[in-house]
Image: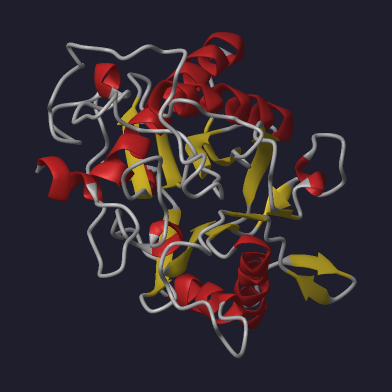
Length: 330
């Protein structure tokens, strides 16, 4: 198997991503949308999630499709990004037709990036504006690292960031991942530079340093505890396979293995770790059970790679509490 053309989630045909950032506040928003509505599911494994419209993604709920998915900084303030995206989609005429009213369905999730050195003394919540800007910027090409929802992200001892990766299965089905990495734990082994995700690296997509030769005591993880205790990693896995909402939910569950492979520790009480899964439905699955298992496995690998790529691509900015990977090891 190989990555798609750009090694981004937008290698899944019909998907676009938009980023918007505020460098003074050190925060931002990322939006994923498709050419049409997306079948979607979600799974939360962290102990401190912040979400919008996730309950309706359960397989037994009436609404089965979404118009966009939003990843945002800003903690609870950042949930307002979804309102900006919804406003923009309604102006485009996109959304659920409810008796003649157009109601965009826009689930979202947030990371806590309020203690990262940015100016948070705003007179007006900036996230609705950032949501609109991210939607307007949506395209098949976008940047990772200190961009969008990853603008102000931090890991245990390095800057986090926005990451993405993709893979094309032998059947032609494409799987992609998008993630804002803001974990309480670490993406690197010990003092680095090797990434926990190294066994799944393709080529030199996050430096090609290979696996670590020495491993510290695994019972004593490197974390932000005692430094900055506000965290959360949030992501999206997407595919062009034809999946039901229940199958999307299982895909999101499987993709959480990628968090555990790339971030140590992950899914803690202090993280709000969450993954959305989305499907365009363009490619029917020839062997639904076998293909579903493979999709979950590939989604986890893709997510682990995306996490490492986000940390690897981060850039240093004045006032950062932690250095970026490249300034330490590049």
